[in-house]
Length: 603
Image: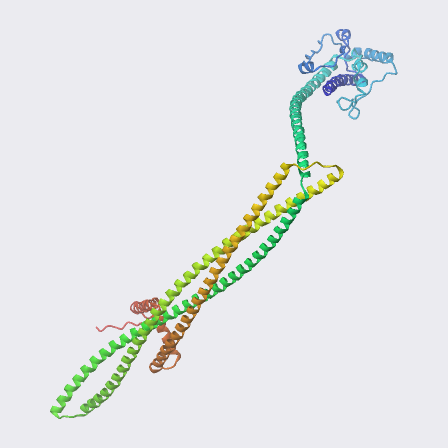
């Protein structure tokens, strides 16, 4: 609680400072020159004794908190009847002031305060050693002026008002100080609570420390016991462990070699599968191309059949017209023969008949040719349909074979992935077991070295039967683990061999199917190319007969082919022509020429 005593001392020093400030203010006001208009002192002012401040003790906490300050009541100015005129008594006042100044001791000099020379009023301005000098009884005695009788009543009232203002300011400062003290008390309570919590934590930590010491003692005893057990190990068992570790290392090398071989086989299988995938993609592309060519040929055949039907209809209509014309000519010939009147017209008609007969013969020859071509086309159509059906059957069979091959490939990939996972698991298990065994061997070697060091320094006791039994049990467990791992490896190796054999069988089947597929595709291509060449040659011969080699004919042919292939184009041209004709008709009927001169009507 030393800080609280310091705080109380600082509070008292503040109060002493306030008293000193009031005294300094009064002395400064008293030290000035006496003006002419100052009033003389009254009788009641002279008789008033100087106020003395009683000696204060160090304030305690309760007194400091309960301390209240009461503002002094304002003093009323003296009545006007008692005040003398300043003109009459100015000379007397001057004499009294001079006498009193002469009576004062010359050695004592009051300090003059201004803006640059202020008294030490704050707590931090005064150090601990200077408290008694600045704020002791001596300073308190001489803080107030002794020549209060000289001060006039008006000046005292004015000074009292100033003092009241200063007192209110000081009260505000004291209230602020009281609040700070309350905050400090709250902090003190908090620190006490924190101290209690820290003490409780200290007690808990001491209890935990005691428990830890007990645990440490038990662990030390266990450590010593384990040391004694490790000392009982023999060198023969260590040699056995070394032999087992060598065997494990040799097995591990063998397993690594087997794993490498399996990885090489898996890589080869993946390469073969990739090549087969590329071959399958090529075959599928060839199939699509063949289907597209077959569809194009079917469209061309359909177009030719439509043309043949149209030619047959034209031929029948031409036959009917020729028959009707021949019938009419025969009738005319009969009439002419009966009449025997052969004129020039009849001669001309006879010539025309002969020419018509020649044309009829030529047309009959052309019709026979067209019939032959139609029969050839039908025969080719039947052959193409048969080839198409055969190719479709072959394609379905090839697709089924491809599906089966894909299923087999997926199965082989799944088996390969499973085998790879099993191999990885086996590698992880073998690595883990080898690492654990190596750790155990290193630990045993360290223990043996420690035992040798200890045996070289201190004599050891005989081995116990229990430690030997534990060591035998651990050895049996490790041998069982090794046997189990070797059996698992043998099983996995047998599975891998069977899967490789299945994969080889599937590869042979794939090669056979691919060879069949290629041979059938080559035969189909040769047949299709031969039929297409013949068909194109026939078309070219007809085009040479019917049309002349010119750009207009080629363009018209292309336009005809486009119109036949795309019915939307035909519909567009039809709509365009109808719209154009309608627009022309509307323009012709609605518009009138500018130079139109109306003709005068006949009256």
